[in-house]
Image (cartoon, rainbow, N blue to C red; front, top):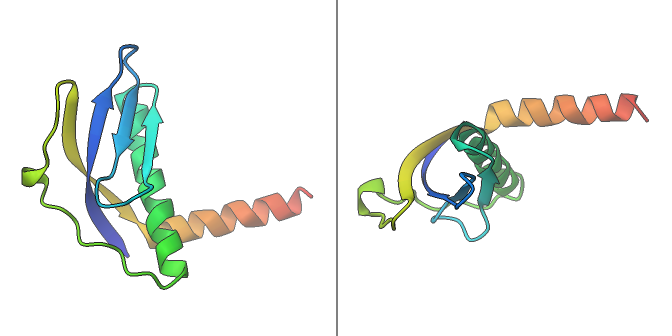
Length: 101
């Protein structure tokens, strides 16, 4: 299933980016730069929603990005993920690790 949620990116003094998804209690990550943070944001959102689907937990409604408040050195953007793609990746990774045991 495809989802789109807003994320808030905040840059630290070293240029690393922290990412927080305000619609989820424990969905956050970081990257050493913006490109890395965008990739990590998609991954953590996929993991969070994939886990919710597996436990039959309904995901929250996505906030309206226009209503999010950001501070200095922060910005918000939308992150898209596909849990079906993530499930395939997760199964492939699991199969590979079993073969290496």
